[in-house]
Image (cartoon, rainbow, N blue to C red; front, side):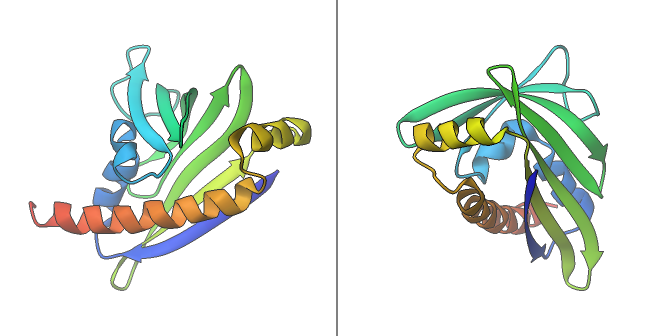
Length: 156
C-alpha cells in the first residue's frame, strides 16, 4: 500500500475545516477531479458507515465511485473508502490539528489497488504516476480549501 500526504496550515478553526471536507457534495468546489455527488441509502451527512456516490472527471473521462465513510471525528479527522466496479481503490482522508495561525490540514491518500489494476488504470486514465498526480491534486485541493475557508470566515 502506498500513502501520499500533503499538509497546509489554513487560518481557520478545525471545526469549520472539518465541516468543509466532510461535506462530500461540496467536494467539487476544491478538488480538481471530484465533482461532488450524493449521499445514498438514507445518509444525509458524514458518519461512519454512511454511503456516498461520487462523480469524477479528468478531461473527457467521467466516472462514478462508491464511497463509504470510515472515520468521522469532528474537528480531528475525516476519511472515506472508495470503490469502483466492485474493487477497493483507495482511502482519502483529512487530519486536522490546531496550530499557531490556524489548523494544519493533512490530506492523505492510500492506494488500495492491486499492482496490475493500478497499471491498467494508469494507462486508461493516462496517469502513469498516480502518486505524483494525486500529490499535485491534493496541493490544489488544500489551496482551494484555504481560499474557501477564508471566504467562509467572512460570513461567520
